[in-house]
Image (cartoon, one colour):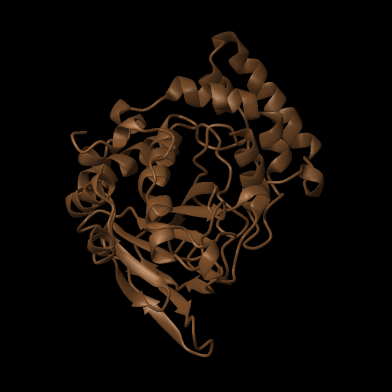
Length: 344
């Protein structure tokens, strides 16, 4: 676990704080605020008394907050444990309760009796909207609503959160151990979702690319786009072999713009625009260059998961046929077990 977290910190732009120092004024203000909160002796109150640095950089922002969150990491983890989840069921991922029924049924049937035909049934649920970019429904609408409600509760908590990555300034990291991440129980949901669905789906859709160990680790975070915050995102590659990008907007929650533009996987001079619909899941190769186009009004919020290998290894070249995973290896039961049972 700690090895995964250490790599996630390194890959997802969480590093050593040699690139950021605090002013004496901020340190003094934080000290006075903490002193005032000590009497309550509550991790949450102590965390709310902190004065975090505001994210500023729109690129290469990996280190601007690192010292603050390393300094207060243990306190923030204690505060999130105290804060917890309003809906405790989100800490207990159960396929039948949260996964889109068509996908849950197809995956359960495949795991009960693995066959190329049953894997084809799963693959048919994901449309290739652009070369190397697949879309489908992963979670039920009420499960997405539950995630959004918890994220709104996180935003209203007053507990400082670290920026999600070096380019996005708005959103949170979902991890139990990374300094400055949200560790209130949502990370358990994400971990189970990755093991049960995200990792196997990535292996299926990119069977020529993802071999043994190429997706062993992951990093999960949310992003938010608004005209007055991060309105766009420059073209980039992800630090992943496979990326899940899951829209968290509700039906009827309108916004304008904010589509993704993907470089064509076969013809770099061409591009493809992909519009999100509520709850839509995109799965694509991390090395495929893409950008977020300007948002015109409203807000778009997404959950993103990067999959990569040990020590941050990101494979970009196809594997020889002999090194590719078998169907059984692609869909093998993860370590956590019970939540995969169809009756759950």
